[in-house]
Amino acid sequence: MISFLVGVIEEKREGTLVLDVNGVGYELCISNNSLVALPQIGETTKILTYMAVREDGVFLFGFTSREEKDLFLKLITVSGVGPKLALSVLSGMTISDLTIAISREDVNLLSKIKGLGKKTAERICLELKDKVSTMVLPLEMGAIPLEIDEDAVNLATETLVSLGINKNEAYRLARSYAKEGATAEEIISKALRGYRS
Image (cartoon, rainbow, N blue to C red; front, side, top):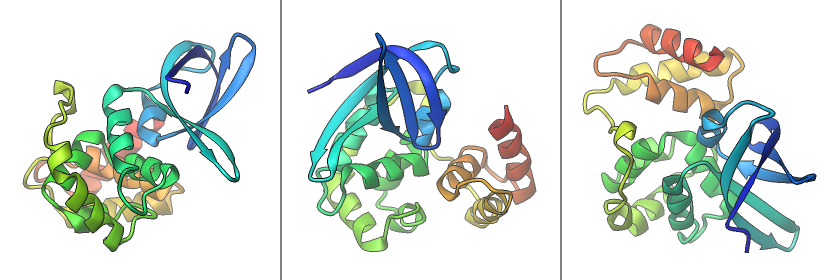
């Protein structure tokens, strides 16, 4: 089993990272959150990994933090959640938002993630709510503000999607810039600045 890789970032694109480790290019499936956290192409980085062996091939999944890998490993224990869906869930919102949504059993919020149906979201909440409540998250991750305007987040997400941003990435951006009392216009403005920077 490959636990981690240290190498030079060769290529970054949505859902994929190519890492040059001593002349061997490893292609890893990676979440949008990890992709954003990575240094620039040409720089060296350490990536935690999980290897999935399936009938259709061998897949390497990469993570920039121990917390993300731990949550991924918890997600794939849920019936009906394979590694690719787990990665899609991790791309849908920040780790802190995700753990809070699961512990609060917020099925409606979770089922907005692309590819995640209501029944699977319910199973995730049922099976993981106690497990995620014990996860220790870095202080900078913070928590979901209690008074976020979900209508503003949804409107901002739709607008960002119409501008060509992937649905999961648009939703993640909208959630991360949705401070208490923020309007859809404020969220969109901040999200676009964050997306382009």
